[in-house]
Length: 303
Image 1 (cartoon, one colour):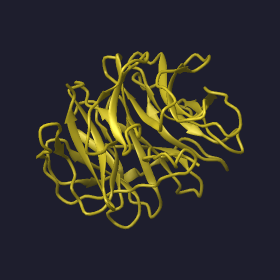
Image 2: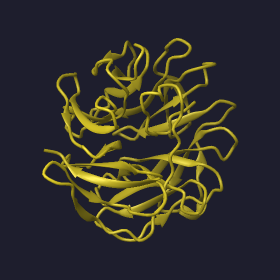
Image 3: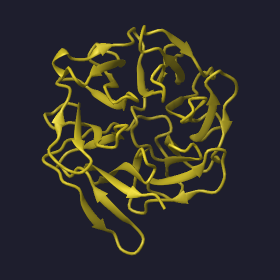
Image 4: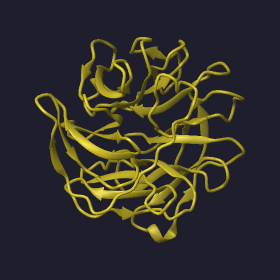
């Protein structure tokens, strides 16, 4: 099964945890969590708001939400305002990624019956999404490269069980395989280094879900976090020196930072955290939190 950038716990190394989201008119507000954690609310609707990403200009937060009963994509100004609905399918639209020039989104949808990648022109929403991939398999969790010439994604197209990473050309839909791991192994939720030479991803190839990097030109993945717990949804920093990710090392999922080549972790959240993404200036992380049956989007400063 595909992750679709969902939270995972200790028992979810092989089981999908599906999240969705929604929002009313949201304005950022500071939340004082005591002496150790200050975070800012970006969305605060009564349903799920998940998988946030920031636009390259730092002005918009894109996310998925189930405001109208099914999963669609939305955006809201980071500075506050009313959400704008971007897709209007009665299916599952998820995992948005913004083109580096800010003009298009790539995302996953099961509108065809299986999950595939679609591109949406943000200047012409009325035209609707255009399919990038198709087939009887599933493709998910796309991430646009810094130059805009490639999209990395996960797929089960060459496996009975498990996932590998692939690269798609957004211009012509051509696909090449990046990782080749055995049956039962997954490689997923990849993100790009700022120089586009490598991607970081999560994989269970050593038994636990740990973080790895691999050269886009191919080769062997390099493990950068230990086999301690679930570690996933990595996001490479704009400077290329750090990776933000979620981990259940201390019980509940929290957001951490680790050097891109491995090393000591820095814990950012204490009150829970999923799906971390960097702001373009690297001054903050946008991420999701769970509160019972609710999920919202927050930001937290990076020390």
